[in-house]
Amino acid sequence: MYTMLQHAHSGIRWIILILLIVSIIGSFTKRNKSEFTDSDKKSYLFTMIFTHIQVLLGAVLYFISPMVQFTSDTMKNAVTRFYTMEHATLMLLAIILITIGYSRSKRADSVAGKHKAISIFYSIALLLILAGIPWPFRGLGAGWF
Image 1: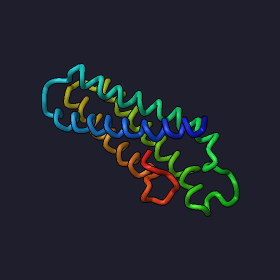
Image 2: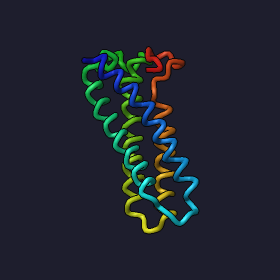
Image 3: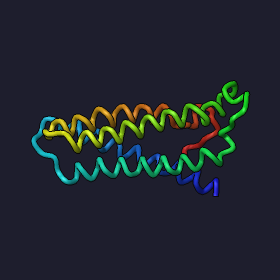
């Protein structure tokens, strides 16, 4: 079960990255236009939904992963520190920003305000996600999938 969840969690990351990039580009290009289409709303919503699903998978993995340890040596080891503290913290901050951005977009009065909320909050969240992913070149024992 652990391996299946780990692969699902790793695979969904690519969907989220694509959705975030599409949402951010869409919000930046439409900031000065006077339309907020149904496809814009769906794009922003699906991005938020997939990140919430990812957080649920990550929460399950957090408690069953051998990489997450609560010992006196956790903070001394770069790999266990990353998975126990850094990855979880960065991803939680990113999901909070995505949720706030989507909520502010829904409540914004102007079309420009809707796109501005998405572009700001989703962009910051994307940077946090990119910093928190265990890329293979970081030497944290993770692969591309």
